[in-house]
Length: 523
Image 1 (cartoon, rainbow, N blue to C red):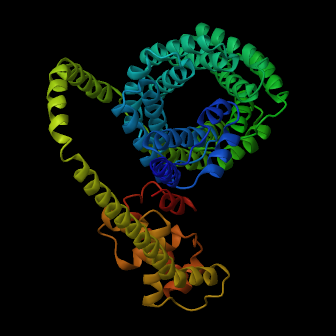
Image 2 (cartoon, rainbow, N blue to C red):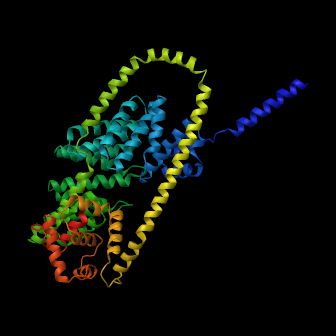
Image 3 (cartoon, rainbow, N blue to C red):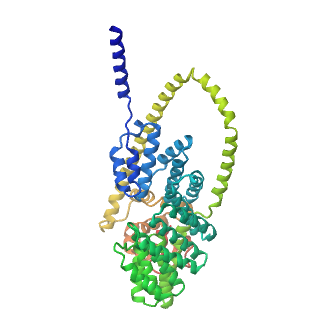
């Protein structure tokens, strides 16, 4: 009897200990089921259930980070870090879960694409295609191949764009999702356009429009994109009657988003048919609210428009602005995607060699495990202590970073208050040396290291010219304002601006009012 009591007490103790060390769990399957169609709900659930991922098992933590990154991506949220998805990818690579490893690589590439690191994005997607090629996740394979096609299309490499877009169409058809198929047709139409195959491009745009028109949900966005691009093709071929009917169609979309590309499409149409009074406000609207690509195209259209109107001054202004946007686009886009593919080819060769030697390694590992079992327990204790130390260091690092940011904000406070007085026209006396230093700190921190870059790019600039550049960058362009802050006359400001143009090597190009300010804003 006493022996039975001891056994019962021992079992109770084991149960209590197991309960104390139980890890939290999530219904990942349920979240995964709603994620494709309701990403915002999935993200809300993940945020609600989130406690401390370190409490999860390694497997659950990898799955949690994968779903969290995917939900953020589908909700079009800005990615601020790639550390979570890299942890997830490393786990799936180590455990040979090729399907989820492919998805993690795709999401990692999406983050790099958002950061305009397109070469790294392509490298991830090439690997993702290789690891996911044997899976039946056709939606993922469609997403990867369409992204690859888009990268080539942006580089006007129609041959490779067509290869990936055709694969994307095959995968989209395998999903039986009409919206994905419509998107794939629109992508193919774009590639044929780059290849100057106008007939094939028109046929595929019409297929995309027909499918998107009857798509069950989310079709309006694809329909708008396909119609707008098709209008552009019609204008390029001077098929104005067809463009007019397409504009009528796009105006009838129930949830039409009037963004920069929308106003650009309409403005360019009216410009081409000679309706200048309607074209100008539409193109200027595209320039004010569009993304960098819409703004570049709007500037080009306005330049052509004013050239036709015989207004060379306005034409030059928009040419200048278009050039600045072109430089910004060029700095963001990757010039080639072949290097990552070649690099991954070497990685594949190394991996195949590794597989051939794996069985030899298995024998060695078996022997090592037998010996390692004798000291493994002690090593685990050491690793736990080491992990606790690393986490402590990371926590201290975060605290130091927060303190550093708080300190920077405190240092910027005098400059922020000074700027408010200057903008309210309450600063009626010249700036002191300490006030200038405060403004230099502010413009450097708030304007993407402008002060530092100015010194690096134009070392010949003097202190007075640096002050003028910073004032122009902060929006103070009137000679009277600058004269007050710098303790000089308005005529001296004009002369200082001329000297600045010479030292910036733009004296022969920028003679019109506002052109110097526009150049400084674009630096």
